[in-house]
Length: 193
Image 1 (cartoon, rainbow, N blue to C red):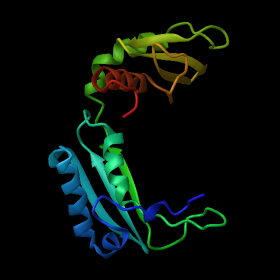
Image 2 (tube, rainbow, N blue to C red; image 1 turned 120 degrees about the vertical axis):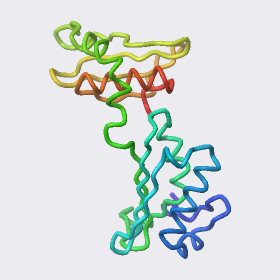
Image 3 (cartoon, rainbow, N blue to C red; image 1 turned 30 degrees about the vertical axis):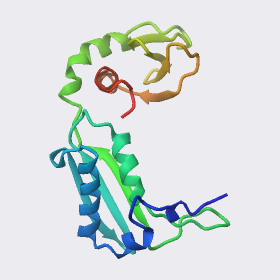
Image 4 (cartoon, one colour; image 1 turned 180 degrees about the vertical axis):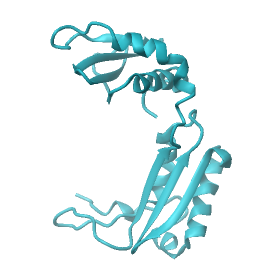
């Protein structure tokens, strides 16, 4: 089993070239690649800093229409983490960690339009054991279903209509969580970003 995933080539940049980059050069290289992929610089913030003997890259997405998974795919090319061959533990020093997240509160305004719908769905009767599955939203290809786990938690499930297997799922605990998921599905085609 190959544990040293970081020895892969990163497009035209090798691991040794990345290790020689300053924080500013590394940040600029990531910004340049994101821009080449069509992401506007005003929609994404890239910060690079040293954390003891490691490097921490924080990418913050400021546009809710951008899928976080697309940013992670590009950013993870710069991730370099060494693992112990025997235990699989992360070795200290010389690692480059990536953190990709949305700007805090980015979905507050855009999901407001689905708050009433989300509230009415969460008030539905899910049965005594919570085993009743209800369709929340659907399009031609996919549907999003929900079932209640306990008094505070519901599970959202995404699947293609022609399949019986759910391939995306996550927990929600509030009206806002469900409103955001509905907004994502309506605007991005998936509950996952």
